[in-house]
Image (tube, one colour):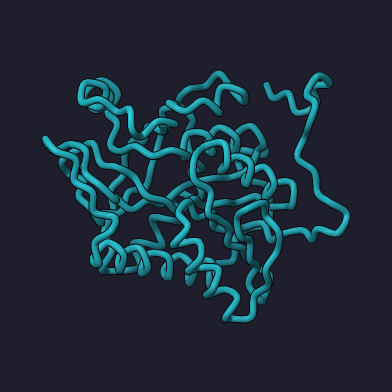
Length: 256
C-alpha cells in the first residue's frame, strides 16, 4: 500500500509556480554523452529547454514528448524521475548502458530489461519489493519499435542494479548469474522501477551492453567507435519513435 500522504515525510516533490507541465511521454537518458546529443537534436528541431536540476530537460516543438538526462546513479535518477512525474510525466523510458553477465550478451547488443533485482540503496525507502517489474505496455512498445527496424535485434533478461560498480567480485557476479538468472547490471534500473510503481506511472528501459563481465577479464567497450555509433543510432531511433507514436492518454495499468 502506498504512503504518499504520510504526515511524517518532511519533503515531497513539488512543481514551482512558473514551471510548465510536461507531455506525458518521454525519454530519460543515463549517460551525459547521449543526453547532450538528444537534447541538441530536439533543440535543433525547434524544441525548448527547461530546468531539471543539473540535468537537461527539453520538450519537442509539438510538445508531444520530452527528453531528459543525464542521471547517473540511483539517487540522481530518482531525483529526476520524481520531478518529471510531478510535472506530468506518466510514461517514461530509460535509455542506458549495462554490463553483461551472460555470454549471449556482447558489447553493442540491445537489452530490454525485465524484472529487476535491487542492489542499490534507494528502493528500500519506497518499497519492500526487491524485484520490481517494468510496465508491460511500454515493454511491448519497445519491442514493436525495435521490430520495425530490421537491423536491430534485442534480447531480454533480468537486471541487477548496484551503487558500487567498483566492488563487484567474481563470486558475487557468478552468484547473481547462476542463482538469480541476472543477465546484466546497471546502477539505476531497479530504483526507477520501484519509484514508478510507487507513483503509479509506466516505466520501462532500453539498454546497450557497454562491457562484458562474464569473461575472465573485464572487457569494456563503451569507448570504441562501433559502440559510440550504435549508441547514436539507437538514440535517433527512439527519438523518431517518440515523435511518431501517439501514446494513449488514458490511465496506465499501474494507475487503475
